[in-house]
Amino acid sequence: MLNQLVNAVVAAVLLVTALLAALVFNGSVQRLRAVHEMEDQLQVYRLALSAVEHVSAERGPMNAALGRPGQFAPALDAARRKTDVSLEALRRGAAACNSCQLGPYEFAAIESELQQARMQVQNLLTQAVAQRDPTQMSLAIDRMIGVVDLEFRLIDQLGQSLQRLAPEIAAPVNRARLAARLRESAGRLGSKLTVALATRRDLSSAERQAVAELLGRIRQLSELLQTSIPAGQGTGDEARAFGRVADIYFGQGMAYFDATLERMAQQRGPSPAEFADAYVPSLAPMVALRDLETHLAQSRLAALQDRAWWVLTGVLVATLSLATLLAVGVVMLNRRLLSPLLDTVHRLIGLTQEDTTFTPLAPAQRRRGYARELRTIFAALRHLEELLQRSIHVRRERDALIARLHVLAGTDHLTGLPNRRTFEQRLLQAGAESGGQMLALIMFDIDHFKQINDQHGHEVGDQLLRQFADRLRSTLHRPDQTARIGGEEFVVFQAVARPAEAMALAEHLRSALSRPFSIPDHGTMAVTASFGVALTRQNAKLHTHELLRRADQALYRAKRAGRNRCEMADFDVSAYTSRLEGEAARLQ
Image 1 (tube, rainbow, N blue to C red):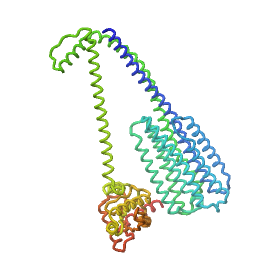
Image 2 (cartoon, rainbow, N blue to C red):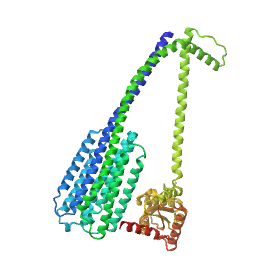
Image 3 (tube, helix red, strand yellow):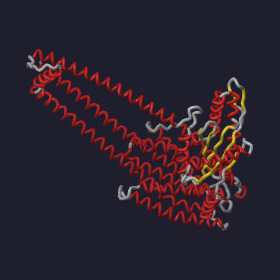
Image 4 (cartoon, helix red, strand yellow):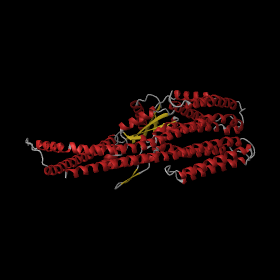
C-alpha cells in the first residue's frame, strides 16, 4: 500500500508540474501575442502621426493659395492628394488592427470635417483676392485646424493604449506625440498670420493674443521634449535630433517669424506664399525627431519579442528539467523520509493532545494515520481560508466606509454641494495655477432668508436651499467650483480675463437664481440674492481668508445698497494691466 501511495504522490507532483508548466507556457505565448498586437498598434500609431502631418502640411499651400488670385493651386491639389492617401492608409491599418478598437465612425467624422473645410477654402478661391472675406478665411483655417484636433484624439487613444500595454516603449511613444504636437503648434503659429498677410495689414489685438498663446504652447512643448530626453542616456541620436529642432526652427524659423511681424507692423509683410516657402521648411526637423522616436519604439518592441522567445524556450527547458528532478526527488523522499515523517506527524499530534507516549506505527496504522493527518491539514486550510475571506470582507467594508466618510467630510449634507473646507482646498489649487488670468470669488446669500424660515418653517427653508443649490449647479459650467459655506451663504470661484467678466458672471447667477422656485405644498416662492465679488491674480500667493473677507465686505455693501444686486471689492488691476501691456509690447 505504501508503494501505491508513493506512486500516487509522484503522479500528483508530475501532474502539478505539468499544469504549472502549461500555465507558464500559455503566459509566454500570450506575451508573444501581445507583442504582435502592440506592433500592430504602433504601426497604426505611426500612420496616425503621418496623417496628422499631412493634414497640417496641407495648410501651407492652402494659406499660400488664399493670398493669390485664381482658384487653381497645383501645390494645394498635390498636398490634398497626399492627405487623402495618408488617411486611407490609416483607415486600412486601423481596420486590420483588431486590438486598436477604432470604429469607422471616427474616420467618417474626420473625413466629413475635412471635406467641409476644403469646400470653404474652395469657395474663397473662386472669389477675387480683394473680395475674400477675412472672417471666412479665418474660419476656413480654423476648420482645418479642427480636423487635426480630431486626429489627435485617435493619437492620444492609441498612445495611451501602447503605454499601458508596453511601459518599455512609453517614453519614445510619448516623445513622438510631443514632437507631432510641436510641429502642429508651429504650423498653427504660421497660419495665424495668413489672413493679415493676405489682406496686407498688421495683426489685430485678438490675433496677437492668439499668437502669444501659441508661442507659450510651443515653449511648453519644447521644454517637455527636452526634459524627457535623458542626458547621457539613449542612443544620442535623440539629443542631436532635438538640437536640429533648436537650431533650425527656434533659430532660423523663429528669427524669420519675428522679422515677419516687424515687416507687417510696417505694412510691408510678405505674401502668404512667400511666408510659407520660408517658414514651413523649418518644421522638418520636428518630423524627423518624431520618426526617430517611433523607430526607437519599434526597436524596443523587437527586443521585447526576442526576449519573449528566449523566455518561452527557457520555460520549456526548465519545465522538463524540473519535472525530471521532481520525479527523482519525490521517489527518494518517499523511500527515505516518508515513514519517519509520518511517525513525526503522529508524535506531534500526540503532543498537541497532551499524549507524551509514542509508539511507532505499524504499516496498516501508518496508512490510516496518514489519511487522518491529511484530513486534519485540509480542515485547517479550510478554516484558514474562511478567516482570510472574513478579513478581506472586513477590509473592503472598512475601505468603502473610509471613502464614504471622506466624501461626506467634504460635502454639505443638505445641498450636496462642497463644504467650506473642500472649497478652500480647491480655491488654493486654482490660485496656484499659472493661467495668466485673474481669479474671481463670488459670495452671495439669499435675501431675508430668516423671514422665510420664520414664516414658513425650517422644512420649507431646507427645501428652498436644496432647490437653490440644484439651480446653481445647472447654471454653472463647473459645478465643482461652488460651495455652501453657511446657512444661506454660497460661494463660486472662476478664472476670468478681466473684472467685467466676474461681474457678468455674478449678474448671470443673480438673474438665474431670482426665478421663482416651486415648493411642494407651498406653491411658488420667489427670492432674491445679494452678491459680493472679489478678485486676485492667479499664480500669486493666495490668502483664502483675506479673499473671502473682501468678498464678504462687498456682499454687505450690496445688502446695505438695497439687496438683489452685485458689488465688487476693491482690486488693484494696475499690475495685471501692466503685464498684459508688456506682453503686447514684446510681440510688437
